[in-house]
Length: 218
Image (tube, rainbow, N blue to C red; front, top):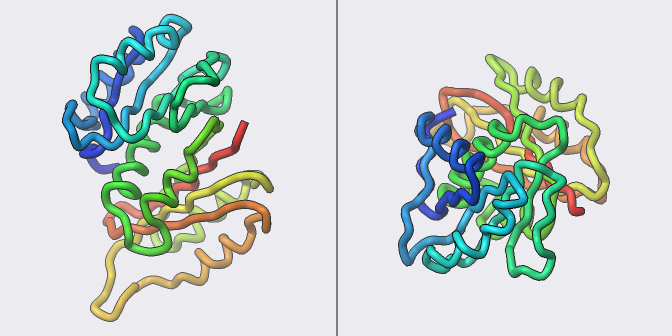
């Protein structure tokens, strides 16, 4: 995965554990925007009860953003229902929280800051995360045939009430459009429940992989 330099979001820590997460992200060339008037999102990491209590304090020190996204590293933490947060996100109990956060930031970079390649736009992406959600990201690389990744994703149980983003990379486009067989992608999309919401997007990259992002309301 490429370096992730977010231009629209600032990463904000509320406690010692979230500070360590942001420091680790920076060590792997993942950066949030510095505080400025063009800031679109505050992404606030919370890892403890003390961190929850500290949310108003850390937000009061930053410029207003259109959206405040709270990311809980512990699903059991309780964030005030009355607060005007755009999103309160948590992960499944067995998740690799650091990996989940890093992949989410990558998806924000691609689908919010670099978007419009296909069937997704910025507003579509935000509908996936609005409100209180449990989210997950699953990623698989493929070498020659994208079915290699889809065969792994087929093992995931899809939810009727789930909202999904299918993101994948292809090696290159040709002068006449996609140099890529979309049939396997369409076949995989057809496996989703009719009541589920599915968005998709793609990007050109020499690193070939598929990510399935899942968002479930709680």
